[in-house]
Length: 175
Image (cartoon, rainbow, N blue to C red; front, top):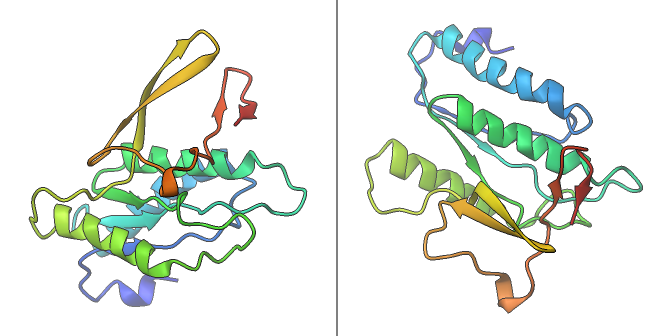
């Protein structure tokens, strides 16, 4: 589908993925990097920027709620393993009851920050949302460390943090 566009110059890509792949996260983990690299090969301009939007929270009826965290993990994997990519985090601006998050301007602003920091040389910008780094088990709690925190991780309105899930070796996610 992109073949007719390939003769034209390209500066980069902004990709807003639909949720159709949510039931095939492990397949997506392989296919998304292949898609990115195939586009780069088609244009033959090197590893141009490829910035994408994290799938926002949404509850698909009685569907397994673990599907979205798994595909988000696949998106994170792409960001961490494919050169010159970035992900606009949306877990904090989605609505679990509305598949179309209303805060599209925030999504656009987050994509813009990636481009400004990585492609237009603007320094000292917080351009990424929090990215998992490591964890420590402390008795019955887990302390999670993040990179890209800017001035810290805070919740909106000082409410308890939500939409965090974690899985052990059994791959069963828990809040």
